[in-house]
Image (tube, rainbow, N blue to C red):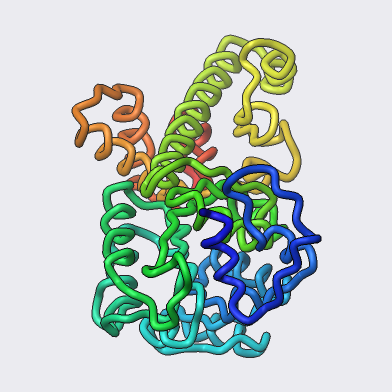
Length: 352
């Protein structure tokens, strides 16, 4: 049934079964066509939210040969994409009217609600809709993801597709940061129907190196806040251990060697070390500039804490981590990379 549904998405394109090697019941013909760079299968891609992450993701779609329509509140970045050949629109509604697939990358849940259901939002034109697929890569709470998905699925399509009577939505937040967005090395955590995920996979692989199907609507958002929660707590533990070790007389470089060859080894010690001078090419080597801003980590921890409260789950480390990163931001370090918690919180230094 899934294969039948996805074949219909080919529209007028000729079906070439000899190209396919079907490995499961959810195999998508898009997988084979993507290997041939047949970007026309997706029509025009709308992209809304061209910030540090979104602009680089959209760039990679252009490099992959996709035809884009874009919107952002920043007119300078809109001009930059116009110069690259993208169609620029002055509202999310206009993007929806000219696109077959729409991707959003926005700062918060409120922004997502506004872009989808607000005035001149993607869904404000009423039924039916042109886009058959919506992908939201914002980091937001699962409840909002599920609400917007329900709103999308309650709409109908202008161009009926056999087996696709309503548009589909995927929540697909990313991991990897700005550098991974620029190099096309992001990991997508995807919630929604498996058929929609399979169909969208070539788009994910044009912007990243991995995509992981997480289950139903909202599960991608859940995976992202859990990932960032674990990352924050790990960074706090590593930073605290480094400060204690240095205070007791052991060099951070020595302690790093010990961590990375023993049971304390983790991403925060061997890939993203928070101590200046220990590792090249990480934010701690450039005064914590760039990387993942502390204000974003505080926001994600707030989402995790709110989600835990909603289901009455005790998460004391979540609460403490949220408190620490919120304090870091309130002390003027919100733009610094979150690994700056080592210097600005644990080390007692207060350089801007």
